[in-house]
Amino acid sequence: AASGKPCLTVHPIGMPWRASDEDVQVYGGRSCAAVPPNPRLAPLYRRLCTIKRGDAPSGSPPLPSGFDVSLEATHHGPWLRTPSLFIEIGSTEEEWGRKDAADVLAHVLWEELGLARADENVTGDLSGQYLSETDAHANADESAPNQVAVGVGGGHYCPRLGDLCRKPGFSLGHVLANYGVRFADCTDSTDPEAAQKSLDDGGGAHAILEAVKQTQAAFPHATPVAYVDKKSFKGWQRKAVLDLLTRHGIDQQLI
Image (cartoon, rainbow, N blue to C red):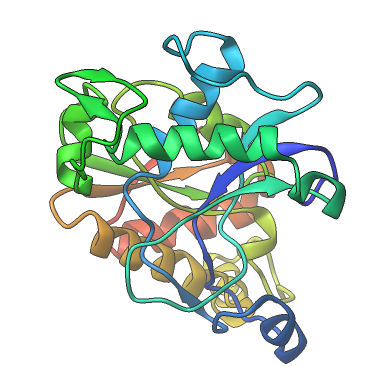
């Protein structure tokens, strides 16, 4: 977690913006490229939130004292072609070795993958029943999605998308924080063409389209919808983002 606070996080991976050579060396992955987001992203976040609220089924480990639960925006590598995500213990070496935190992550993965089911109840016995991403919707009492959200703008910890993501059935792909939607200097922010050129030249247009493309690859039967954080952009920037989405036929929702 970028905040430095103890936190259990889950996030998509990739750097669809123009990353520096130094960032690629430090964080892995490829500049201007995102990895298909694993469809288990939102269900895993909901399972973590259930534990945080204390509503998890009997036998679930408690959230360690002082820890929070959070989504994070898409960031870092590695580069992969398989739909993937990171679920991790943040944020410092002091937390990385915490067995109580690792027990929580192991438990939510155990549940999500269906490895501990006996009949329809989660138990401590390995059933050998692994659930595919498609079957996992039934495991979570959710139907397969007909829409999937792609976050555009906002902070690294995605508070608005996090609120939406806690709702059953909400599916989430890539999430671009503000730092991933980059604009070059704009010669005239009142000119739509100049604003669009700023988004193109800064790499923000490519990042948005790459995030949508890879989300669609991971959710081939769902329609991507761009959830644009309206307060995180200046007016001319927001209009440039919405115009880009409209030109490419991408549904959009302001949040």
